[in-house]
Amino acid sequence: MRKRIGILTYRGETGFVEPGFLRRLVKEGNGMGAEVFVFGLQDVQLAERRIKGFVPAEKGWKSEWFDWPDIVIDRYRYYPLAKHSRYPPFRKQNWFRYANNRFTNKFNLHQILQEDPLLTRWLPETHAYARSTLVSMLARHRQVYLKPTNGSGGRSILRVEKTAVGYSLHGRTKQQAKSSEMLSSIAKVCERLEAWMQREKNGKEDFFLQQGLQLSLVPGRTVDTRVLVQKDGEGTWRLTGMGIRIGSTRSSTSNLHGGGTAMPAIPFLVHRFGPEEARRIVLECKELVLQTVARIEQHFGQMMEFGFDLGVDVHGRVWIIEINPKPGREIFRQLGEYRRYLQAVRRPLEYALYLLAQDETRKNRSLG
Ligand SMILES: Nc1ncnc2c1ncn2[C@@H]1O[C@H](COP(=O)(O)OP(=O)(O)O)[C@@H](O)[C@H]1O
Ligand SMILES: [Mg+2]
Image 1 (tube, rainbow, N blue to C red):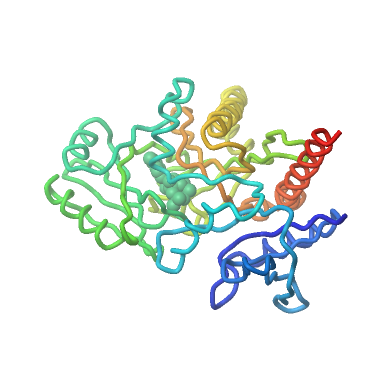
Image 2: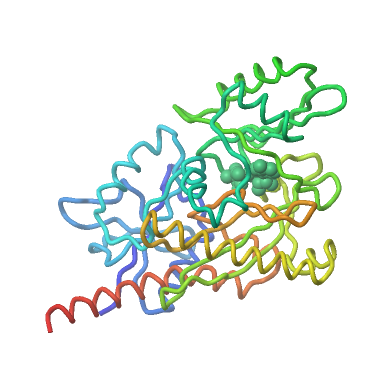
């Protein structure tokens, strides 16, 4: 029997958020002999147990009714906005066999990882926002980042940096606009940060403070490393690829959405640190990623893939900046690594089919 895989995502008035990727996903899934369709929450008819699914047409998309999927890949990127309010309760209901479990926000995740002594050396100091905390962090770190717990794309992040004459603030608004200013006192910095949180927050969203890492591996730029780790068709974690992102000039973030550019990781690290140190860094990144996903699965159950944003600081020390459960693959396209991009698209489908095969073996065993 042909397996039926549903891809859950947000479908708005103007269509899907990442249409190019979704088209690829359907096409690759079809190539594996599966039936694949994309759907939004409004397309699910629970009573009839059917779904209005979307598949690529010559131009755009066409919709058809599909029977209940055997498995669903959850690609819904949630933000605390009114238009997404139906997602959390829906997702908690487990109406489907999901290939990926639910995850949590950045700050919670940090608290969970922090409990594992194997991981603490890779975690930057992180706290909930409070004036006194900001003051004490600025006494110990040259830079402190203020970040929203549910942010993405570098949005709403503000960096505070101590300078000889005061504090310089650099940020990105929700709309990705750069913002910067100089302030003379810490009291003004606190006021500014609080105004920022008021303006930038979505709903009841919180912000947290994080030790600023020295990521200017290219002078004047924020540089970080993106590692994609995915389960393969045998349920084993694999590092699919790694790339460097270099932020635009005078940007406090490196995100590609914010105008950053991509570079292949190994040549970049060899150029910056020399071959031996680069090798050590790459091995440490791998070790970090595999240990962290093991810890995450202990806590959250089986997961499918993650994009790790890692910081390699100017001393060659490796840090976890963010772990994204619904990562993009665009970096590989930007690097011209087209085969790797395709592999990155295929792996979740292969994993979903693997899970279904496992379900069947289990069922047969219990029958026999
Ligand atoms: N603690 C930090 N120190 C230095 N740079 C940081 C820090 N936190 C974030 N950044 C920069 O900002 C970017 C975006 O931050 P991240 O936490 O990944 O949020 P987002 O979800 O918006 O991508 C990172 O890729 C990095 O370039
Ligand atoms: Mg990020």
